[in-house]
Image: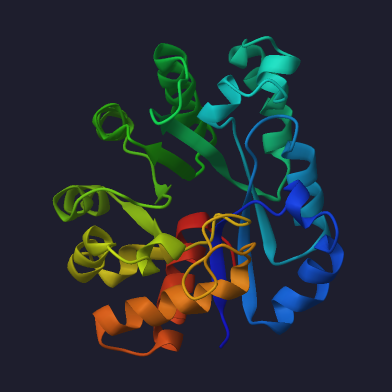
Length: 265
């Protein structure tokens, strides 16, 4: 299969240190991967994200501060900036002038982990404001935070992708009507993922994009292994059954959606 566009990846992760060059330089292109949005999570990995985008033409960069960076002791948000995300975000602003940057991300809210609620809300809002100022789409992380998340999305109406969408079909209707795309990855193939099936059956096909969140979230039948963009074929195969079409058509449709949202060729 061809024309795989992965709208959410973390190839700067240490899990790829041993074979990153061969994977990105040979294996992914040979495996049909045509596009990747490589997402930063803080100022520490932003330079590595940009380096990958400069090295491999099919990789595009998203820069931002992930909410979990507020609680990770080895993240620059804590280790360098001592929790002052405003200073970190200000230090990152010049990086957004790089033409490889096509989105603000990964940004969002996470209430699964014990993170400071007010700080992550303010951080997310500031990055939504930055995206609006720069006229860039966003790549959004929403984990167990739908209420506050939807409040801010209604207020700012960003364009972009709500990655690893876990909400209801009812919420998907207004989110897509507002102009957001919804990201679907390995989790949709897991046993019991009935909510995702309802969403995928209900939303317009031009509002869906595919992703991995690699090295995490590998789909069935490779669940538990290190994930990479080639595994999107399994997600496309699952969605093809819901859409009553073939996997290549799903790949082509979702790749076109991704290119439109992020403004890339």
